[in-house]
Length: 286
Image 1 (cartoon, rainbow, N blue to C red):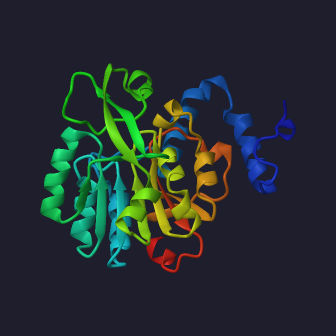
Image 2 (image 1 turned 60 degrees about the vertical axis):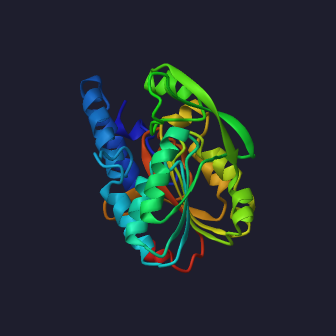
């Protein structure tokens, strides 16, 4: 087949780009280059902020984002899936005026979170968040009772992702909407969610706040856990209408643009920041 017969790329792609893509396929779309192309793909997605390696709980891209957010001063933040409080402690050190509520349902991890909250000055809440209040089963490694950072409301996270036996305990959960009403929080500058595959359910429990414009920024992870919870990236676009999505990259936030399955459905660790359109301080975050 000649390069002119190939049809690589979207219909809306500029002609020069399509010609270049067709030529690339003609030259390198062969068995001999298959492994090389896979390695190139892995490098490319890392350059997009997907699967960025870091040895720290908070990597350099997230640290830069928190520094920019901290310049706002007195902000309200929900840290959902706070574990032992690393994120809340770091944010509080950068922004002493911030009001932070850190949510952790696992009783063992919560003990450490309470200690961190008392030292740093944020509020610790021994509950999880979901799309409805009540009780749910929280799963963790069967051979550990400390409350690991992998604890999840989805058993399959352990069976399919971590390939480990899981034990469970019953925990209390509430919703963002109910908690904001209970604590009389009029506005959330940041809703940070790291819930091991349960992120979408938490956003569905915040639809009243999101719909009324009371949530400015949502930071969440998207990764292989979403395979187990059967959640697509498109579901987040649907849950956050009127928000623009960005990947955290080393020098700021890179816009992800309109939803496309090819570029968005990557079940690899990525830190995503969704910003409400028209937000007056949006430029400070980018």
